[in-house]
Length: 188
Image 1 (cartoon, one colour):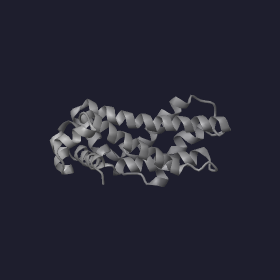
Image 2: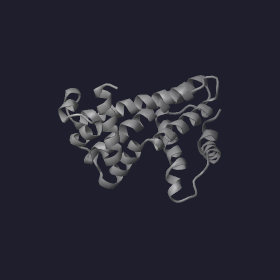
Image 3: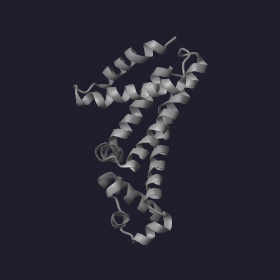
Image 4: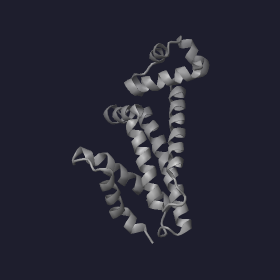
């Protein structure tokens, strides 16, 4: 493995364990088993290092979404597959969990901004898919931006937030409620 990749992996681990605020270049260097100067040959500062990790994660998320889309399948089947895969990816990523916790508990601006970048990527992707479904006549005329936000928020409520006050729903229940609340309102 090259040094740059070694530094990125160490930084991802540090951000996942300690959060943005508590991660230092010294910690990253220690985890990567390199001198701190080595990090600065690749990255100007912690912010640049963090942005690179987020970019890599977003590329991976886009690949996951692209893998789940089946153009021969109906819009709502694809939507469910993509959201399910992305939220599963998100729930397995320690960095997402730590950033959410840090943003919620400490209000660290960089943690919130990182989460916002990821959310915007998902929303842009959803908006493109809604636009394609509109062009194919699979859904009623609507504003793709508004619909993508509602879909995303509804899915998060059903898959994560509801778990705080209710027994977690299984995938079939989530699909059923998603269809009940949204698909029946948009379907032609």
